[in-house]
Length: 124
Image 1 (cartoon, rainbow, N blue to C red):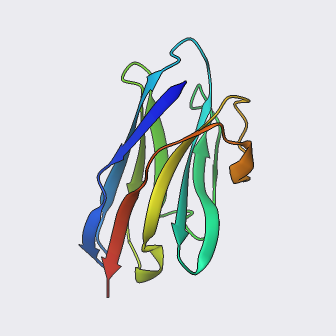
Image 2 (image 1 turned 135 degrees about the horizontal axis):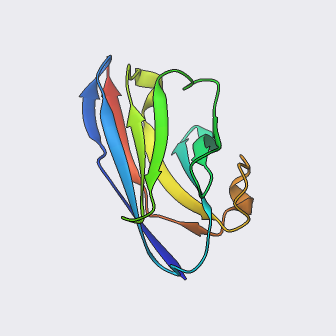
Image 3 (image 1 turned 30 degrees about the vertical axis):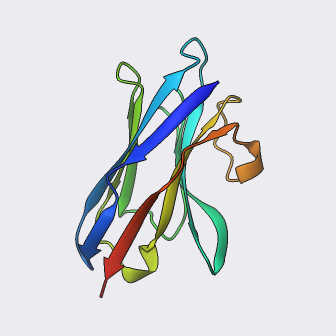
């Protein structure tokens, strides 16, 4: 079992920045990639970015490339999503998820554990 807890969401003006954190606990002997997804009532859950266990590989949605950066600190069991130049279209609930295949998949069903989500609202 892995427990994931997101934090750092909130309300920000367009053009602003936020940093989300995802703290993992539990199954510390496993290696896994970590993804950030987001979802709105109008859209299906979509991948924002994913990082491999070592941090050497990343993958981002085209809509956030150049604006968002995913990183991880395995000593702290924490993954981060630095979001800059935020747009109203980035408004969503953001979830972190663990993938024990250590893949960079964009498919939600390939992720084994999920956090509860944190709301990000970007005002225009």
